[in-house]
Length: 75
Image (tube, rainbow, N blue to C red):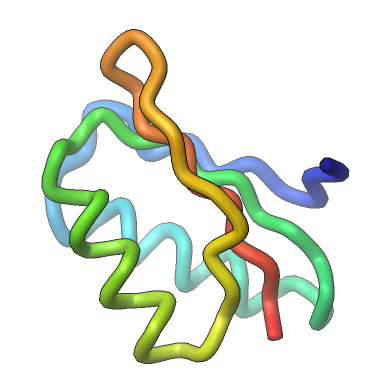
C-alpha cells in the first residue's frame, strides 16, 4: 500500500491523535492514504468514530509493539 503522508502522534493522548489526523488529511487530495501512528489505546475507538463521521475510509488498523497504526484513504 502506498502511503502519501505519515502522521506521528505517538505519546499524545486523546483527542490529539485525531486532531493531528484531521489537520493532515485536510491538506491531502481525495484518494490519498494517510498513515497515523499512535500509542494511545483510546485512539482505536476514536479513529473508528472519526472515520464514520468524516466519510473517509479506514483501510486497515493494526497494533505492533504498543503502536497503533491506522491507514485512512481520503474521500
